[in-house]
Length: 297
Length: 221
Image (cartoon, rainbow over all chains, first blue to last red; front, side, top):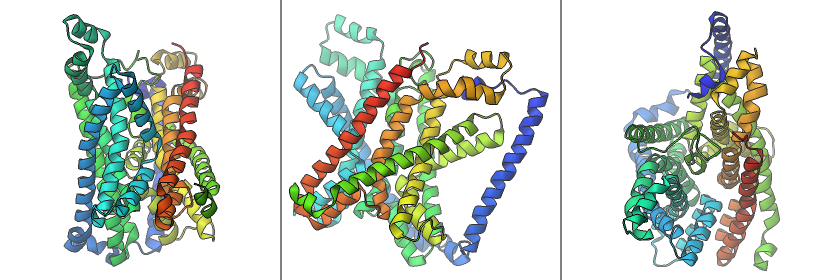
């Protein structure tokens, strides 16, 4: 059921005319707004050739933007792999039969979900630059990766747990009835299904990680945004640089989101996707992933 | 610990975090609701603009948006709200936080609309209510109740994300921590425990309250 069909019927002749009039009015309004933005940009000289020319020359790309993008992708890639491992370990601990272990994992997860990623980053950065065994130039990357791993690992733990919780009870019962232990049932039957079903959520978590690498800006990590602002000090074209950098982020993240949707569609066709957009226990039809995903900046 | 309190005005940093959260929450709720109505409307142009807004802002890092608000819009394009540098930064911080989180508010409300059974809107239309009346009397009141949980998550994310405005020098909790890291690094552990404790105390009740409210106000079906 699409959200639009809840609200209105297929429009009849009168409604079509009305919609067309409203379309024209809103189109004019938004065009005027866009025109205003463009004229402000033009008044402030943002369309001068000197401000945009660097982007068709190779230097700004080879010296600043591409190395920045590589650093962004590097931090995101390391973090997502470590976070996946941490998330799985935490999920196993949170579902373990040992009460102290369950509690410890619970406190760990709740703590790192409550503390802002940027706080973790500043704190670990402060620690790492004081640690003699860590080369000072590696401290920013380490801080970014540590903070992102701790936060996203905790989020992934919850995603995996929610995935296990959504499996039909019969799966666990069947595992136990053929003589597997609780742990074996979890590892060999429940987790593989939960992870498959939650794959779209886990992939879209990558968008969060990619965006959050920009927090590294504050701990002098030379990611895309910071390298962009360094280019700016060279060419004094802040607005164009921000527009280009934002476009790069939007394209990458949009592609990742589409990938997650594609995987979700495939899983649904194979009957493995998350069940029930109508009668689900949660209060949102969007499913539990809404609760965990895209939580952060 | 007492050394930190002597050296820094800790309470004022925390108070700034609370102010930023409250003001940005109100602003993003207003913008987000407007965007959600646009995305749900029968007018294709409005739907397109709403979708474009969500796609663009949800996929851009908040750091970039906050940085661009002050240095791009305010300083480069010369839109100032106040002559005082810190007041100006404060308002553009709220602007950046609000436009970013509005995209999430919009999606939260849309997911709330999706909880409403088709028959409700059909019934509303069959008794002759117009689109606007259906939206106002039937859909939105129920959608808001269904949206409490995702809206609560957005609020918690917003509270944590206010830390990002240290990028433009607003004196809030993250700024405090980085100041301690620079000026009193021996106190770093204590300061981290302090701000972490503050955020746990600040956000956990939000989660409990929205959880309680969504159970209490849920439309039983």
